[in-house]
Length: 146
View 1 (cartoon, rainbow, N blue to C red):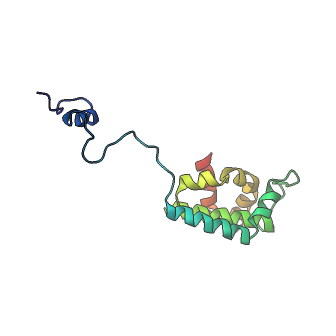
View 2 (cartoon, rainbow, N blue to C red):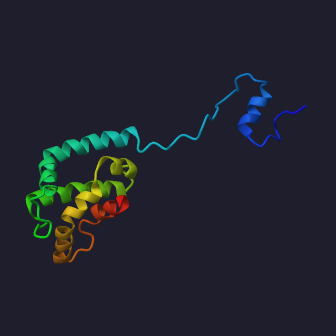
């Protein structure tokens, strides 16, 4: 009598042992896709969205993505550019330190798009300050998004 122990598919073998009855214990129906983040990550994203609104991120984003914005002449201390830099650097720092899920953030924000618009200003500020870590977490997150 076949007890299912030699069956090439263990999930089917379990069914075979039960003679068509529902298997006992957990059953894997399929390999489910990984869900980005946790409820804690989602709560933090909501708080970050609130903070972004408080510091003027919506207006800053409209400015840097407008056709009138000149990324070649923008400076890191321009209020709208600074807002984008500070917000994204904060998010990037949380991601780097595994306090916020990377995939969830990259699904939420267009980090690479924002970086392209303020990159020159950020890199010039980095060079002027002589601090290679300035805005590095924003830049790394943008590179992850590609």
